Image 1: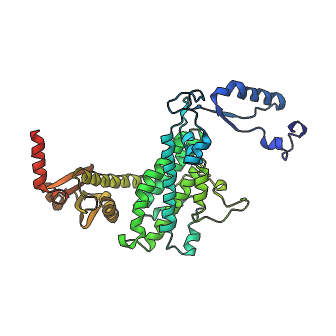
Image 2 (image 1 turned 180 degrees about the vertical axis):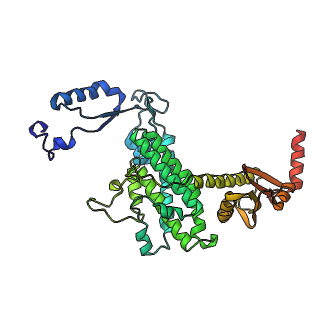
Image 3 (image 1 turned 135 degrees about the horizontal axis):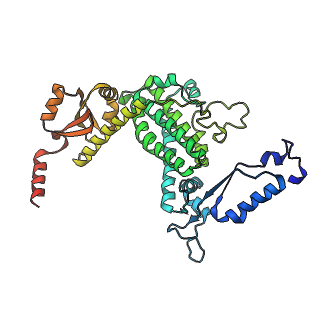
Length: 402
């Protein structure tokens, strides 16, 4: 028993487990239990049992009412786990925490987070079964993540790689700061947005132009893509592990891993280092790469939106002329194959021309849809490749007479 142990003995259970650091609890038992724990701990040991009390809201029914057997709105967590998985429920509850508010248990949100877990599985499957299938044993052994990416390696990367790593490192710093401030819901939501909106929707798609020879990839480009794909996925799963421990632990073991560190009981994600262990050493980032690639993203979205607006067939490839200047023109030219794939352009009918050049003036005067992406970047899509001009005129005339 604790009273039979010497609290000054560092090997005793009392010295090891008392006092704690943080108590997590609902606000409804603050005075029923928490205050009594503090008073009794101070009375018996002279030390408060914890330094921080993290109060969260109560889990309520979807409509915000209190769960009651009389109302018949009680949700059995075991049934929810059977249907959606433990990690989906856990992630929904933790990210649903808003200071000062209760947590409505929304089944649609849990189902959406189950889809997120499935998305993470699909990302890992792509990396393992596609990106890494041609990697040799020596390369696989070198892909294990044993620390942050160094600046020398970072500076040698192409624009999309520098962008996704910069965004990942921004995420690490932001999530670390949020968790230290107990803003758990905000931190979890940021990981979700990054993995789905940036890693899956953008970088995995662009990596195909590096991995597959049909898109002009292969060789050193493929090796670089594999390195970045594994690094980002490994780092993201370390961040997500406190929120989805079972899914991330299982998937992490399918990725290349660094050898077990000395003193580590097992080579497990649960025991792996946090992505940023030393706050005094900032992670490498490139603000210019972020701004430039965001321009590339805006250009891609503009062309996609134009295709949808003109009802262009999904599989049809269209021609385009991109007008830009300076470093933006160089960046677009360097990633032209990525733009061709993402926007479904005809590679033989795509050009990047200097702003104010004769080619740019000719396109502006011609019969083309003009897309203003941002200051200094425009795209021209010839209408002949988008629509049947005569049919479109007739449609607009009929519309104007209504």
